[in-house]
Picture (cartoon, rainbow, N blue to C red):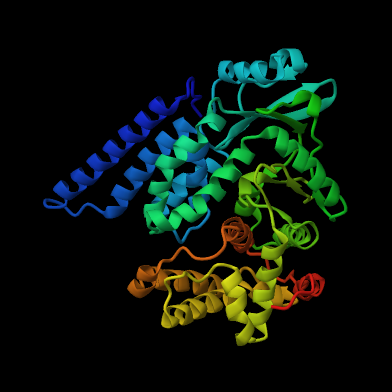
Amino acid sequence: MKEQKKIPVGKVKRAAKFIKTGTKVGANYAGYYIKKTVSKQNKEDLDKKNAEDIYSAFSELKGSALKVAQVLSMDTNVLPKEYSEQFALAQYSAPPLSYPLVKNTVFKTVGKTPDQLFDEFGKSAVNAASIGQVHKARIGEYQYAVKVQYPGVAESIQSDLKIVLPIARRFLKLSKKEIEKYAKEIESKLLEEANYELELERSNWITSQCADLEGTIFPKYYQELSSKRVLTMDWIEGIHLKEFMEQKSGTEEANLIGQRLWDFYVFQIQKLKMVHADPHPGNFLITNKNELGVIDFGCVKELPEDFYRDYFLLFEAIRTNQMDQIESIMERLEFFLETDKKEDREKVQKIFVDLLSLVMKPFQEDYFDFSDEAFFKQIYAYGEELSQDKEVRNMGSARGSKHFIYMNRTLFGLFNILHVLKAKKIKTSGFAAIIEELPKKSA
């Protein structure tokens, strides 16, 4: 893949790139509608061209722009497939930066060049994602993965989001007012993700807590070889989960990895109240021993006690059909607006009870078949039905606590990976244990 020799830094240069891309997309639409009068050009061609142009610009900008593309690609129900397929490249196959830029970042933030820190440092990136890229290095017999952040990414997060969020808003069909509620949550998580010192601290703590999970391994992190923009860890030999899924989907090995993924996430939710909130294939490796390697803790969501309690109390109230308690829990979880009329509240309650009834199915059963197409079609069909419901859109679709953003992203990301793995008979029991351990407070 061709390396990128420069990156736009500063508000003006980055804003100019966004504007230039918007102009190009506008020209694509104009060309499409002109040609439409004389030919039967397929709209898929337009979507493909726009997706390529937008992704090309976001790839050059890196940071928040590319991160939003990555997040949107994880939900195949949000975007046309031409966009989701193109944006999925942001997970670990973005165009990498050239070595001089990497060398400069390492020197500026660690105080030494890569050649001074390591006996050997690969000048070409082995993986490149939205916030940074990874290089392979060696000291003596030990091999390391060195994640180097793109220049200017952390400093441009806030200004980038002011431009990128309206674009995402159109895809998600939300109003400006609706998305404002969640913008600060997204911004705070991206700022955390750009702070490699925080990632090192969290990685060490979470991996120590998860150390006894069978068949799940983590790299060791090295503070003396890291900084706020450079993160050095053990090199884990293996293939990316995406490659594993392409090779092993539907096999016993896929079931094994699926179980390890499920156990990893349920343990974090239940025991740590803190969760790896970026479940895309680029963050996992599979070793030749079928071990699950977790290699990135940049995005971690801490679950506040009140939210955690009400989240699972709502699941339990729905499961046991305690209608009198559901409304009060939903009130605390911010599903209702002050402007809602009685009939609005009733409709909102029904919508989310029906949706959560679907989402909670894997938690309720001892074993669950994630290869079941009917289950996922039901969820996607329900989402599509709601998106077409004018009454629902007029009521405002952005409802619920801001903490739902990363909790839902985690669950749906996990479900989607397990579905692509065609993982069957995953032992999912444990919901009752979560309920039993909740702080005793009346719903």
